[in-house]
Length: 159
Image (cartoon, rainbow, N blue to C red; front, side, top):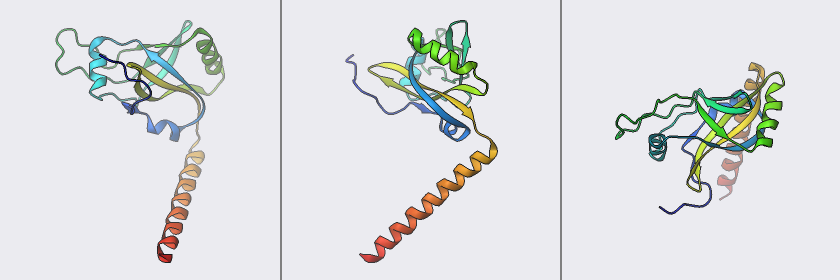
């Protein structure tokens, strides 16, 4: 099999992460996976909804990510919500551990994709938003949408 270069379309995205957190820093991490997990991911089946990264010792682990069992797997099938190790350089791990030690900072997976044939996770450090921040962001987005709509109507009338 020939490896494809570049980034493909995401297998899974955590859309709610950008709504619930102020994203500060984003890094790309590899994943330790079993064979049936990779086959299931290649079918585009995964969920990052409840996923988060945790520090154990001097390593980072991804918890709560759901990769459903491979349909054609046998007794070798994996556990869907098992904890998976994240692969990063030592200095990146230390940087993320220092960031997490600050109060209120979490490690959130944003997206899961294949890059050069390897499964990668886009991992971000983020601070949780308050309810009023979420309402403000929603109102801002709605105002932008209305402004674009008004502008497009105005240009449509000229034609």
